[in-house]
Picture 1 (tube, rainbow, N blue to C red):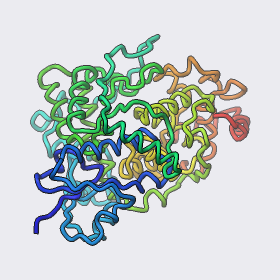
Picture 2: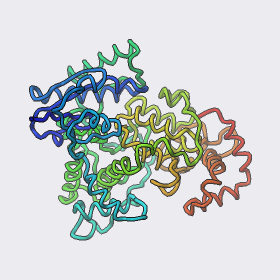
Picture 3: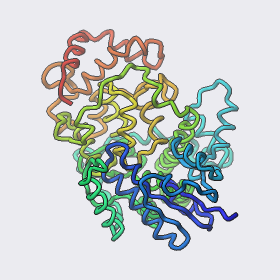
Picture 4: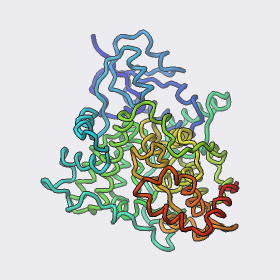
Length: 488
């Protein structure tokens, strides 16, 4: 029997197409589960419809309410194992033949062999990253890492240039919308008017790739215009430059539009040709073949209940309306307001805005981790069920008690002042922790440590911060102030 390849929204690129008949299902129920950023809804629908148009007569394309409306009763389906527990349960329920997953540098079998071979050792990113490079030869000179170092984090932490408005780089090459995008926009307008979907955020022009050709163009533009500056300013932020030197490839990668190995081979070739610095190229390799692969494998390794079953720091506060509705005008702290404004306008923010501003704020204020995880999934164009748990529950919120990260990623206003230009336009003072000008991040940092001290007392990496807390002369006043703070 000839099998029909059923592809999902994370499998829209050439690496998931072996040349046979295809089945593509647009299920509106996916958009109805929770409020979703309009840019993300648009991106998903546009990518699916563009792929259906590309495949032409080879594809069965169904636009239905639920997946089951298109696949129930069929016995001719095969599926490359999809990217969520929900989807994997569905394809097994309908009896599809399952093929190994694709779209990552390290296979699930390779990761399992590495992890099982470690015994009781922790599954640390750095260990995985080095083992991956040794196994694949990526950015290696024989048995040694290219350039003589495994990572260049120390070189990739430069603050933004002083008094700069932007990095001064050319604008990214934006995709051009077409009639499919117009159709998607009309459908979203109608569904929202009918109350079928709850859309949040701006309906701006589409800024992320939805086809393999567009993704390749984004990669080429990144290599030509921004790769050299990516490393040094990887962690820096400027109010007037929302993209900085980032690649904008996370969304097309997670849609399966471009193979991560192609991205890595392209940037490594630039280094080998002497056209890109090792620190920038290694930074890209670390993010894609290191971190992205690692959180993918941890999603399966940690189990389906990981997101629901961890709240080590006892965080139970609900997310405020300013975040749920992406309303930056309700937020006084300029760094958080500008970061949420970027999410509202683009459905995207770079990793420092996510981790050290939005995530840091949520950690300090004790927002419920599962709710925050779901918010990141729904509000970011690259948010998927597999990518966020280790990032949010583990790294950002330390809700798993140290499985993913060895300490909480908490910081005061001094870090934000160093790495961004946000503090200059803020009514709060990052050097002040008490009084009307007290920075909610600086004061919030100490109030957070006060709240979680009993839990973190045995963490050796927190010994110095907790010792500082115990020496704080105005500790009680700061804690009291932050307990009564009703501004963000």
